[in-house]
Each structure stands twice: as C-alpha cells, then as structure tokens.
Length: 167
Image (tube, rainbow, N blue to C red; front, side):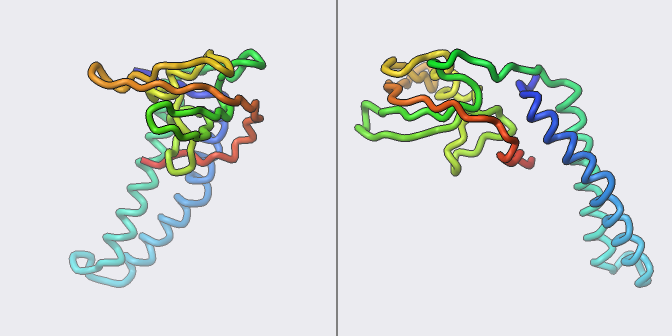
C-alpha cells in the first residue's frame, strides 16, 4: 500500500533528508570518530551510543526516501463548502453529546494529541467530502460505528508547520 502524501508533505520530507544528510550525518560521524579515539571499543559505551545514533539517522533517511519513492500524491483541493485535506472541522458526537475540532491531514502529520487526524483514519475517511449539517457515520470496524454531525468547516492554508511523525 502506498502512503497518500501531499506536495507539502514531500517538501517537508525532502527538507528533513537534506538536514539529516548535511548536518546530523556530519555530527554523528564526528561523534563516532571522537568516541573511537578513547581506546578499547569493546567496553566503550560512548562509541556504541554514537554508532547507534549514526545508524538511527541513516535509517530515518532511508525510510523518508522510500516513502517519497512510493508515495501517491494527493490533492489538497476541495470545494469551499465540503471537508477536504487541511480543513479544520468541528463535529458533534451524538453518543457523548460533545463537540470536538479536528484538522484533516495525511498519515505522516497525524497526531491525535494535537487533534490532527489522518485522512486514512475512520473519522477522516468518513468526514471527507461532506458538508456542514451532514450526519456522518464513522465506521470503526465491522461491529462498531457511531454518528457525528458536521458543525463547522474552516479552510486552512497548509503552511507546512505541522511536524512529521517519527517512526
């Protein structure tokens, strides 16, 4: 399965790759070199920690490059009055009689603690394409679903300030 990413997601990933290659890689190699100079490598914790940091950086670079190579680019365009990518949506949960606001983003920017939900999540999938006043069924799995009503849609500009998730 391909990750659905926006052009802004790709740009953020490319910026992170460049930073990791030009800055972090250089620092990591210097740390390994310095730790290696301290002597016996078999009992040198600093050396092993520096190698681990270097390897994690290289792994993150490979991960981001692979995501870019296999990504399916999706549009952020949507009608003015319907839920689309990067829109902030206020919904009413019928079951709980509570209101909540979410921003619809791609999976790499999703962060439930900051109320950013993925377009591939059950809630994100259910909301996309609907309008204010629509009653939408959010199907969590075969056995459970719930209803929300869309109260408000705000069109927000994707300035790229949302952080990418690290894996």
